[in-house]
Image 1 (spheres, one colour):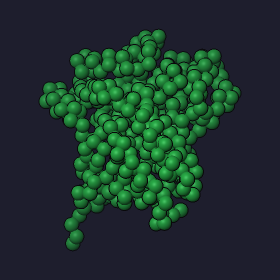
Image 2: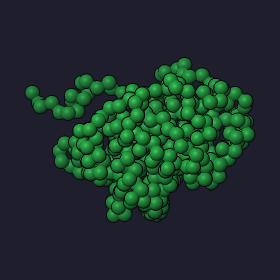
Image 3: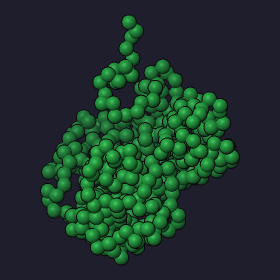
Length: 395
């Protein structure tokens, strides 16, 4: 009998919820990951946007090890030094006025918290989200998510949610009313196709929200902490949202999320929300180490420069290929929209030693760590061009 592989064991015992690629990753360092056969891959997925400062960053590893030997868990019914330090740090980095935070364990939990807070603060039930949006898979965030294949198996979802076209202020204005608690929007749509909006769109959304008495929720789970070339995606339009959802790269790979609130709301009523593991000292220590690296190395600024370089290289090398419809993005969140399905090309790219993500059925998404070098970006471009020009991939 053949020896059982790690993939055999996972297939036997995992839930089955995830479409698996035939690849077992066992180690990571910086922008690289290795499989169980020792082959190295350039990771342009960042673990679905998480590894902003690269895999196994020594600063995060040291912070986690030290904190694990000190105090791992401490619920928010008690004060904690690491949590207090992180809360102050987030308030100092966020757009001015976002001085309070609810700490949790993931991006979808951060969105859930923001949605609950919006209803609590306004006394209104309605939420407007965008077509092609993705906000998570728990019931509230799933209700805000657009894609029918994620929603339909679980309907009926939370009532009160409506969707309007992204980057369309007229449609949003027509949908807002006196029952709208909040508008939730991604500064750049991620899973919806790596789509940046027109300049001024987010500022226009904010103006419409203020006129209607609704709150603006910025879903910065994927765009936050430098991914788009600014600390937060909403800063490209000089917008300070009322609520901001954060996750993914906030703690360098340790699970964490945060919902930031504007200071004008003051503290929320005690007991209005909670999370057993939210704000645990281990995750807070990892987040503090991650934020220190991001700031010390100006990784948001690096993402702006490297993203412009990557976009230019893709425009020159990839955009002219017959299979390509458009190349777009902001910072190191780049989408290559194809005229056919993307999955076979992701497989071809993996065979060339580069890992990438889909963003919908026809968009190849590049989401590399912000520490990627120009030489490594060139390697990614060469591989994408080769994969998209190849004859082995098909519809």
